[in-house]
Image (cartoon, rainbow, N blue to C red; front, top):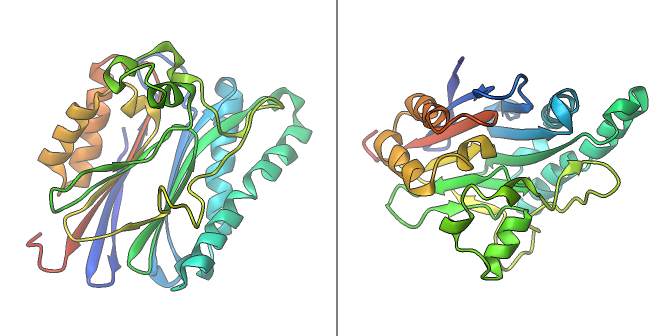
Length: 276
């Protein structure tokens, strides 16, 4: 397992990131993909995590299209001070993904049903703009010990939890876990819904970035295998060492069976007199 890592200034703060992907212990190929890209003039950081679907070949192609499309789309608007400009820039990048998939399908109709989830975090202008489609989550663990934030999965299981048919504990590891309700591509029956909206009153696309915070993005090969309390314990112990946290998180998923591909990106925020 190769862990990539780096640091980038972020105003008075510093973002220290680490990332890795692992095929797991069951699957032959890795349908996950990720990319961590500095914004122009090192004004921030763009992180992309994608989990492919449609069989090994199709899944690998789909997730690669997601990360390559976003990487090719990086421009100065992603670092604009104006929130609307930043949001529109990232959303515009995401709007290029499905046309890119269709172009690839025209070259190989065997990829007709390929699809991918995606979670995207753009650190710029002192905050984190995040968007997602599917069940690859983003977490923010505040440095002040406040309540952690987690994106809401686009999945049948999440809908059933919200309807009261399952508790989160009962739903963990359920067979419906992989029945997602939003993705890029995925064939004619699939639907795409990118959240959150710019003017959402329920979930803001903009998260604060403060000294001591730990952001974590992953595929369901981690969050679907490692229980939330165990993941929170890992973060508590290793939040100031993203490289060690990524390694420990992947090891924890492997210890539970490693049934899926596992991708983890961790971003530790330091500076501002936090002592780290």
